[in-house]
Length: 306
Image 1 (tube, rainbow, N blue to C red):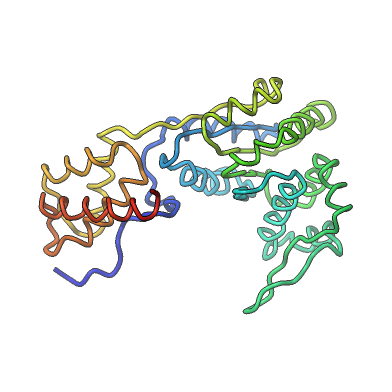
Image 2: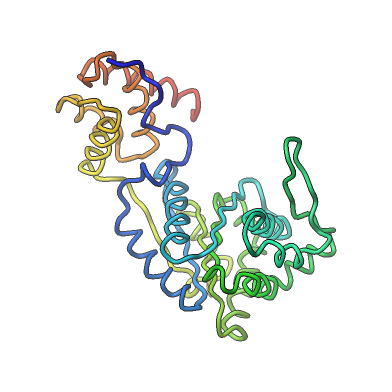
């Protein structure tokens, strides 16, 4: 067998769209919402699922799909450890600024941000949104208007915005977020005839309940999109395709072992697949390879997650 250069699996990181499998039903539902956004309508979706089910990978796929299929400008903002509203707003506009830096509309966007742009970076110039505290508070209070001005800068270039707020679990411990988002949705409904913005929040199922308990009116504002464990057939197809991409074959009993131990969790599928890939020495995955790979994957998971 030729020397292995890289694994077709991606343990521990969000899966690239080219390696994304399953979730067809959820993608079809998202597609309906994206069509509404392209028509100028505000949409908000809460993507929920237990840990290890691939929520971030699905969001990454949705972002690239929305940009390619509907010409939206997408940003993926991670909010782990963030609870203050001002910091949330800052991160959103920081991502919007960075995504616009090399685009044709960058001058319009920089004009909107004014003197609140900071140049950072050791090996080349990058930009960062860094307004003073009072400006940030004003931006948070007038968030819908600020987004409207940003949309004006995109006219003729992009059809709208997709704003992904990932790992929002800690954010929802702050009751202010629920009231802030309710105010955002209400103002858009009352005063904006065209507001092509799609908010996609990502969190655990219990956080959905917490959000609605804090502000029951959000139940009519958010669509809930839930992902569950993958089916055995989806897992089989995933392993066959991934190993096939590496010009490797998989024996049936070995395949069933990987399916069983993956338990429908994408995070386990990639850990097991990667460990089995490196355990094999002849290009044919057999039960011995899988046994060695599962043992190694168990050690990795124990170190990384437990």
